[in-house]
Image 1 (tube, chains in turn purple, red):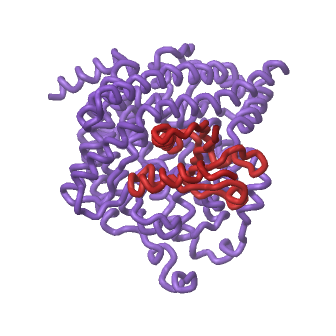
Image 2: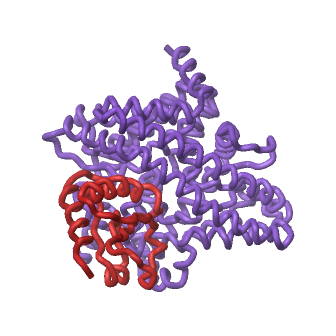
Image 3: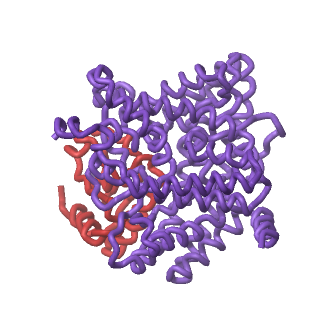
Length: 461
Length: 96
């Protein structure tokens, strides 16, 4: 059995995502009841999206290779691992053998859990299975095994669903979104780590009285929320510090701004291809789950509207840069880059833990990302390998190291990294134990009372 | 030709999911639209050229003052989809 799976993994890797994913998605679409023409259109759109993504990630890689090591040496910061950002990482993750398999596997697991009455969350956000595929790819890199990678990905899919159930009450209360939960491993993972600290911080009265106003922050820092400007500034600064000539500095700024705009556009095409399939999956699952109480599981992008989340997300930019520098002597080699633009995904599910207090949210974000930067550094070899295998990217071997700040910082990413440093048998046991913990969490959802205490709750009313 | 902005957190993920549905629906009703995707951070009240905004998240109040904003969440969950699509079509056929 294991040998067969390894063979399949090898075959998937050889054919590459441009061939495999379209086929997987088309077949999945047909099984879910889509018309043939529509299913093929989805599959083909996906393949085309990947062509675009590889092109633009290649552009990123070229610019980064020029800056990377020069920056680290000249500034003496030792930050030689560059954050390629989640849009590129998502495409790379889906492109791995584990990534090819994760969508059907994830859907089957979710349906199974609902049937067994073990969850109320129906995860229609199949796009975000990529976070689990990412962890699976890291495990495959460490163990050399497709099987264990798939195991890790499957287990983390289950964990994300349980975390959605766990976080549902407090999220519903804060964002006023009934009937919706968030199996988004990224934001929910951060939330899990932040929760105990939030509990502590909520009891430090003086911090809560230092109120930061979200609207002022948005007005002052708002321009950094626009990716093209963020890309321009950061590109120029990095190029200058790396000692490039003036024309090159400007060109780098423009190229990085381009990357910040173009990679997401390509990923948007991927989403367009995936949407009809996701829709078909949702209808399929809803029919079979009829009669049960269901939360619809969505992408935490839906939570980004509140001013507190946006303001804290913007503040995460200088915080993440500062942390990267501060933690450099402690082992951080990650240079925050593309993912600076999406600090809101860190803060989205953390803000409710502290009732939207901007200062506390930023402190929690700092704790999570501080640990996360070290996590991202650990995962660099795996990510660099993923980038190299993407094929159309020419990287001088051992020259530049890549990582993904956002996903490296998900606690589950580095926890699984550590699990699989041990022999696979032990890693499997640890994974299952961790999974059982998640299951128990889902049975004891997080409510405002638990976080703020009975007296505080009464005050807030 | 009317313009619709699809807005989400990153301009990538959830707004792409909206795109497919909104365009298909409007085309089936014979309404000609140009559809553009944005992230919420890119919106500014003096640069809105849309007739309607469909968003998957809360939009800042200063934007809501200058353009009709419709909540597109139902297009993601599937619950209340038809009503939302009808509301979009209706908002577009109203002349400003």
